[in-house]
Image (cartoon, rainbow, N blue to C red):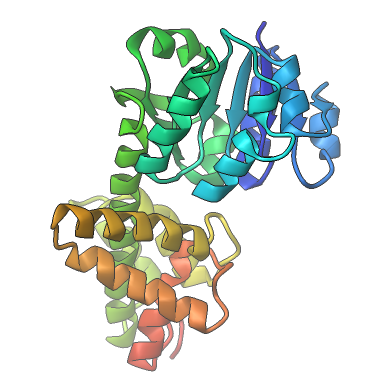
Length: 295
């Protein structure tokens, strides 16, 4: 049994913390909102700050929305750095900038602790079922220490490289996901506008080369008009901004990533920042003046 600190009990974090508790680990958690009854029932202890969590745990895990949020959790007032002692391991499972990740790691290592970046993919369903893909940046020996914890939360656990490599892999993942959403939305809109049942089209192509999780799950969302998150558009915008910023720095042209970002921007302009990212299809529908499901 490991004493685990967990900060960030959102859609993903609640499920991930619950799985760790179910596996028999002792958890100490902090979030800006009150600890959910479902987590308290699992024996998870609520703390008053990230500092308190860090004081009580052996392994500290955070999963929060953005780069500045991780900075605040670690180094803000009553942050984890104030409660850490030498030998502890800090794992950040948020999706943030690879550059700042390396800076955060250097500060944590200066305290005599180890740092791991381990962003995830798989959404709420993957977090609930323990089937997340976890992309890890860490020293080999540190990865081996925390791998059993990752295997409780995820099915595909990969050491990508040194600290920062996990975040780079996650940015690449988010680029592919966004472009797949755009492709599925465009194809189903095409089918619907041509007068063909988009659900039957989705079924027909699901067994072929176009098959994907996006077609399976988000294609169904587009057809059924279920755009409650999931994974919010504003979070995916943040991830694509990381890609486009890094692309400019490296002299890379990322034209389709940029197009997806503009479609997300259009959704946000129409009040859709909190829609599930499959709601990108609504921007395509606005351009077409036609909605999937419309006669």
